Image 1 (spheres, protein in one colour):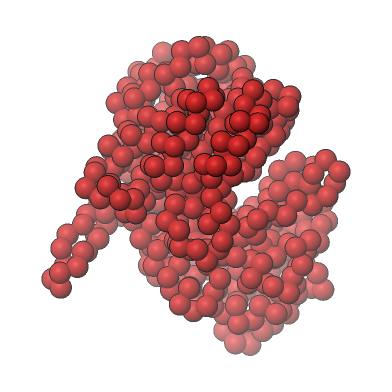
Image 2 (tube, rainbow, N blue to C red):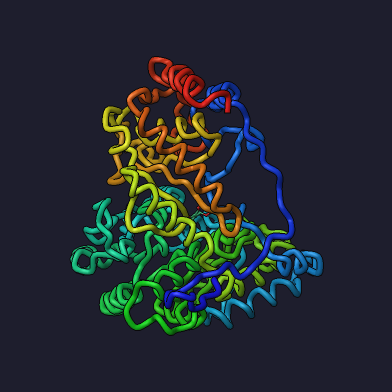
Length: 480
Ligand SMILES: Cc1ncc(COP(=O)(O)O)c(C=O)c1O
């Protein structure tokens, strides 16, 4: 954002870009929305994008790209091996983050796959602020287990603690003391996706680094959404107000031994990367790249995306570009909070997060309040959000449900994509749904996949509540 003084002595934040290409949206009528969610097995992942009005499923791979990124794609050098675009990417990573060894991979989970293959063994324990679905799957597939140790404020939905992504330092030390030799690395995710896009403070990563040094374990940083974390540090952490985004980024990543990213997020392309200065580790990692990803200089990505990633990384710390969607999230969360909708506070990155257990307090946890709410929001608005609750966890090895601390729907705000009128529409439809929440019942399984079940699982609405919701909607609000 461009920040200037306003006439009344306050601060004015102005978006430092304009929109020159747009995509037309269309709002399907409510009968079609009901038909579409039924056909999608009440799973918003399985909706066709053409049946969606405002797509707030994720920020992944759907951020608006800049003119400079598109231009870089055109001049990318297509070569199976040794493309100039790869060397440009490497030098940008070194310049911005200080890492010499850069491995492109086809997306974030590919990085997690390779890192887990090299570092995680049967019986390994990986402490972290919080898991991400694909991270947990890869660590467990490699024989390890995760331990989540966020600060206690992180699980208090109403707490406005500014860095809910922080690790509980005492618990980390306790784990390292007890299981040190079984811990291959500590993982920090900044911002923490499933905690509601909440940031990690500089102070916290520094303290984690000290403990990693003391117990001789690696610190791995998932920097997929690092742009937002850096912005929040400047907004919220004492001592950083006058620092540049570039210097905050540089300091933050300097505490990690290895950084990986889904480049579908902060750098606004479709790919991923791993970066480190640890040569020994790098040599172990690259063994797996030709097997699973492709040659070392393209790693499963097109060279066009690699070229656009180099630009996207620079834009991630461009003072006038960054922060636009965070301000919109902030506005939406505050408006929803004023209207009594149970939103996660404080406003984080990534999107608006709603506490489905409180919103649908009459729906039992084994009937999936968050899944039900995501489906209901789609019916009531054509807005696609994502379930981030029990459905997003797989069952334990004995087939029992795992109920995560937070049962949320996440309404993502991709970077530089949506406008205030979209946020106002979302607020309006959520308020209507809240007033009619008693109609929404839970969901039950029709087809449950054994792993990452939320992607492909199919369910149905208990007692046909979808039809009832549509009936009331049409009576009160009409066909649209
Ligand atoms: C924090 C985090 N890590 C890893 C991933 C996985 O990245 P990808 O979807 O590119 O495989 C994601 C995806 O959303 C994420 O949010």
